Image 1 (cartoon, one colour):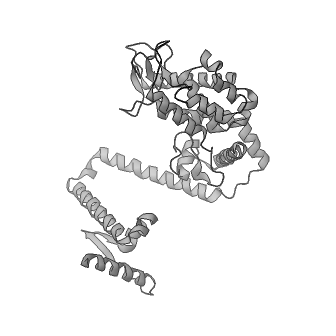
Image 2 (cartoon, one colour):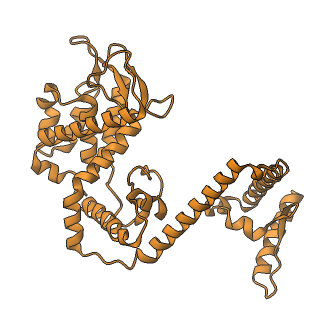
Image 3 (cartoon, helix red, strand yellow):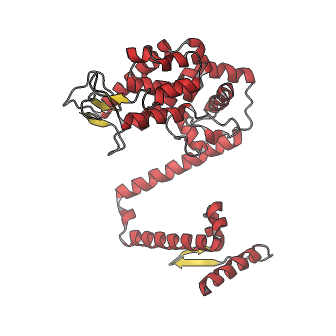
Length: 350
């Protein structure tokens, strides 16, 4: 209790000092020459953590800071910086931080200054919609097809369930047999081939009119299904496909995901059984189908581009710029077109 009261006093005193003409920095901790002030700690604590319990937040950050400083002191004692390998890594990290800071400075300065007409946005969206769809499908499928044990591709052929098709890489099944192996490059090539095949199946089994009505995530969800299930006669003759081509969305989703009616069974003909993995896959595709493409008012951070943002968190300006390969001012307008075109597409599918 005494320590807690002391912290409240330090916080109050620190605030009072900030408002005085002669500001005195309140020192929370010292490790040799390193000093942690009250203001430094506050600037590194998130608003939510600080508002929940400022004293606990200060204590937690102070303890982490002390531990970090002690480790840094130990690196000095061991003279790790004298190692050429360590020095090269430090230099690369510094360069990366400088590049990120430079990119974010460019983006911050120019984002609001570039004006793009509504017609440019509409044209860009229509021209690049297939690219948007393929990238959304790729992110989803790659995330779903990775091997849980390694969170990566499967270098050796395996059967997801007993008696199922042999699978390798990121969900590739075409021509795969027991004992097959692949390198990462071969897995990438197989995946790109299979994704393009699923995209072609989407174009051939869903009418052009309906494809024009579907949003990016809605289209990506159907492509994921075709990547996993295949363009089978059962799909082509199914009620699910019929409902989709009439834009009867609730009925389509039901037929696709229902444990009895849906595409959730596997096994030999006449002996097919419901598979939990397929139930989960169809449910994930349903959720993707129902996910808005982008919040039109959310700004740059809402973008998921080229795998740099998985949609569950906000991307930094540098993330988005790296995703587009942006390294100069001439590329910024293309990035802005992309953002506004996705927002335009979200409005169309809302």
